[in-house]
Image (cartoon, rainbow, N blue to C red):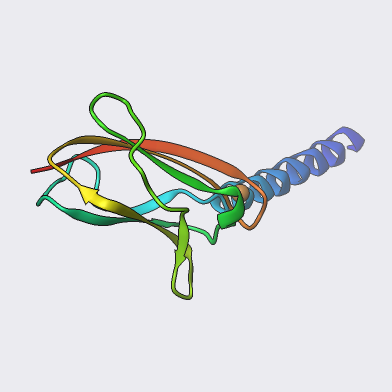
Length: 125
Ligand SMILES: [Cu+2]
């Protein structure tokens, strides 16, 4: 009898910690949409790139790096919020991007204090 009660307490604890964990996991800032998108081919003279995340992020601890086909970093301004949208970071290309293939490496700190990162590629016609 005691054992059964203990088991149900353990089961309850496990269930609640699993729930807490999954809520935490859901709070991470994952990449929701990217413009240009993964594997997209866009017209030349691309002026900016925007990444929208599933959670708000801290721009001071987040960054977007863009590499050209020779794996050299392309000049981008500091990643900044898109207006009032705190889950979207934008970088400007100055000068605009010419033809070629590019790799985007991003890292963000979400407002809940978790770090996530990722990368993808796109091309300019
Ligand atoms: Cu998180």
